[in-house]
Image 1 (cartoon, rainbow, N blue to C red):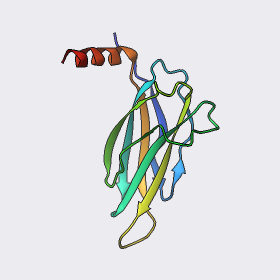
Image 2: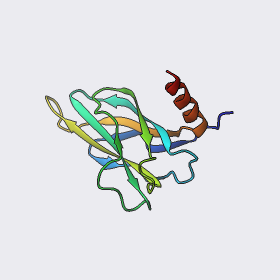
Image 3: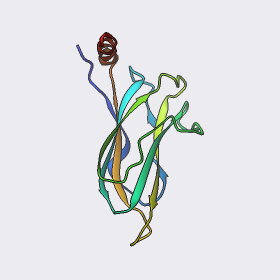
Image 4: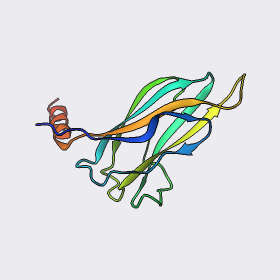
Length: 138
């Protein structure tokens, strides 16, 4: 039997970014698993710009690690990008938040503009075990 997958919103869908910023802290301490599937969904862009989104961890939700614990690949286009976030190597992390940086070059306005959102879905332990077992058989 598979457990229901909980979803957390790190950046609400439709967020418009024209400069660097941070999402709200999300408490993951109640999750039954330490592995999550992140999804970066970009719905609007303008040409010649880039978006970098990384995930930072914290033990208390106010003091953040100086380095990110994971990052999506740099994006230039609309679409969805997955990220496997494994917090197992970070046992003290109970909170996460997204941080983004935007850049623009070329002609036209110098201000970048991205409309995007970031979600995390918990991957239940039973699914991880099943996938690991299948992978080890191959």
